[in-house]
Length: 173
Length: 316
Image (spheres, chains in turn yellow, blue):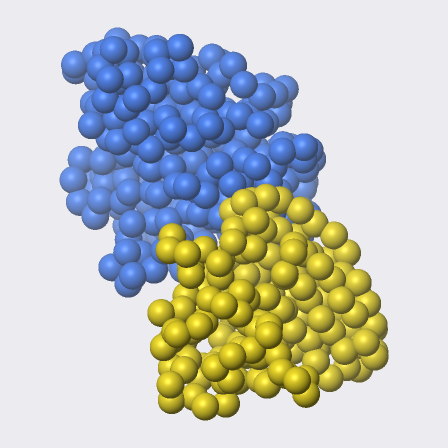
């Protein structure tokens, strides 16, 4: 792996190479350094997560109350995007019941953050599916060229949701 | 956690070498028992080690001087398995890189067998990595289509039990098979039906994994067992009738008879027409083994199946 790819993927490698499990916390669950699930605190989340051998995550989330948002956050090395033309990812996912997942690049700023959604939704079904998407940075001015922090987000339905992320690889070129 | 691969092999040294080349580097495969089932040229342990990279100390090679069929060979292999867990594989199968991950997930879990998904090479023409649609539908009906490791409850077991009766999609606890005397039937074809159903009948803890652990090679034509059209297929009815008696009073009755009658129809399609009358006689006798209440359930749940079976008997 090149230095840029290694910087983007090292946190994922840690999660992929081990096995672990735990309960979903009401608003924020840490699975591995830089990889967290955030939910609307009003939703008071419940559930379980598992990181099987060789895979990333199986999430099984139930909100106790109505909530507005739920997302898996993957922290990115902000320096890895410096001078890049493309930021993108490939993933393999499944879901016991069909769901749509919306990937997003979040960039930190002085006044909070800016979100830029990837062009395509991820469709997750019981059958494992591959998905690839990318943002062309020169033609996407809403992505700030410099940012103190960046994250890749996967917005999930804030409802009873099970999502299995078998693999995720990030690239910038 | 480690396991033994138990492999019957008849005249397929290249396939065996290919299988073991993939399995030998896997840390989870600690031992391999091969039963050379009457190959015209006996397998040579030195050649197997050299071709596959499997250290000689990890290999037990047994030989039947005359072919006994894969079921009897598997039973002989089972008697020599030195590890707490085993996987039956055929010499022309392949194990995938997901097998070590499945073994890692199983560490510390209490189970009699873990059924996992496989890749059927017939799916490759549609660029699909997975099993045949009818098996996949049964996994989905069981609510087990997605998940690295899931417990199988009694209701889900009635669905999974109807999947193709393969031996190589189940990772077994060795003592489970030995304690219940579970093995393959001593018949040349369909020998794995009894292993499959007795596993579901006796298991107290079943796990399921959506991992694809084995690639199963299916050739549409040729001399492989799958393509045999002779009367050997009718030997199935002896173990089928024994199974029927044992399964009838259990929740597996309806799925078992549904499966068995479906298999009868499949056999008719695979059998040379000269043996259709004999098949009809066997099927008619087998129908008598179905308890009336199960027969009524079958007629209600699957009237098309019953009509097809009646047609099979009538046409002879």
